[in-house]
Length: 331
Image (cartoon, rainbow, N blue to C red):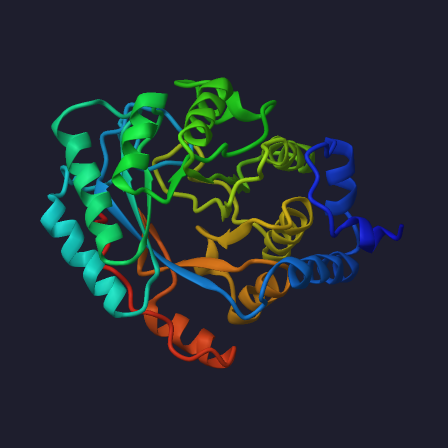
C-alpha cells in the first residue's frame, strides 16, 4: 500500500514518533497529502461557520497560563460579565441563525459545572438554540456523567473541552487541574453520546513532540473527536504567556495539515490566532484541511477576524458572503 493510500484509513494507534515524522514532512508534500485526505473524507467546499458567545466572562479559578479570564492573573484588564440570561443568549443566537450560522457555541468561565440555577439556565439556552434549528455546543469546564446526560437530554450537539497540549507539557501551562481530569470529562462526554469538540493551542513553548502527543491522544479516542479546534496562542498582556512571540503562519499550516492526516474524518476548526493570518494563509490552511472557523469580532475575550474581512474571504473562495457575527460578550 502506498503512503497516500494508508492516509485514507482512520487509525487509533498513532505513535508520537509517526506524527512528528508527518509534521516534519517538507511543507509542499505535507499540504498535498493533507489535501488528498481532505478530499477523500470531506466536501472541500463545505466550510462550517460557527458563532461563539461568552455567556459568563472572567473570574475563573483555574490558572491556565494563556487565559485572560483566570482570576489568578491580576494584571489582566478584563471586564467581568456575570451569567447572561437565556433570553439574551437566544436573541443573539436567532440573529446569528438569520445571518446564516448553523452552529452556536456558548462558553462560561467555570472550573466545573455545578448543579443549580446557572446550569439550569444553560440547559434552557441549549434547548432554545436547538429549537432555532442550529447545532449547539457549550464549554463549561469539567463535568460528570450525570451532567453530561442532562446536556444530552436538552439536545446538546457537542461539548468542547480542549486538551491544550501534550501530557508531558501540560503542567507547564496549568497547575489547577490534571491531564487526567480533562480526559475524565471527555469520557463523560463520550459516555453520554455527545459529540466531542477537543483540540489544543500551539505557540505556548511546547515542542513538536508535544503537539504530536496531543494529536496521538485525540486519535486514541474511538471514534475520533467530531470537531478539533486548532488555536495559535494569542499572547495577552498580564498572563504568564503574554510575552511570547506569535506562531509563524506556516507552523499553523503544518499543524492543520498534520491534524487532517491523523484525524481524517474530523472537522478541523481554524480557531484563535486566525486574526493574525493573511487571507492567503487562511486559504492555505483550508487547502491543508481546515473546514470550520469561528467568525465574529472576538473569541470569548481575544480578537478575531472582522466580519467584513470574512465576507471578502468567502467571496474570494466563490462561496458568497460569510454569515454576520453574533454579538460576543467581551472586554
